[in-house]
Length: 218
View (cartoon, helix red, strand yellow):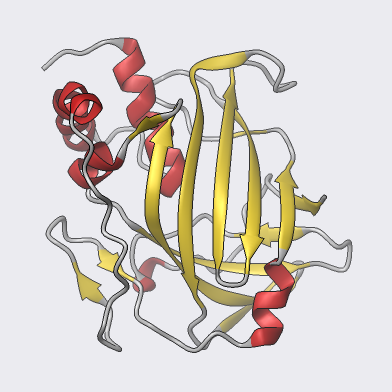
């Protein structure tokens, strides 16, 4: 099914709000586009419940949801506050170059992520659509990996709610079937916060940091 560039862009932005999606994933894109109009007319509640098993669970789309784990206070305190990223080029969304600036507003083991997308490398000309706002919860399973910025800890992130340019996108998110990120993080000696490129399962958790994106405390 063919659909408009705006619908394509919304699908791409939604991918960026969750994980580094494969820009060639035509099946997910077509399914998301065919359900966009119904999503805008009917608000669907996002699944806000965390898994109740210590094992990683598979959802209907075949992706994994994070398993519960303890949340050490020392790790959580690293995140608390507001962090803003540099302007960096991210995935090519269906052939369109996109640049993003991301803000994280973190309180304990929850955060709000705002992704602003632009068409230029100065992040001055907004894309259409331009903004994805999503709410997340975090789990901190045991595990760490050495990186060029120091020892990075594991973090599992669950999507709770999402909106694209002010429109509830939970229905589109459910269609794509991605609701979890498996990542690593570290605050380097430079005081910047770094993540990896997130995986869709614990087995796909990154072992290296994102090469171009970093966050600074505000």
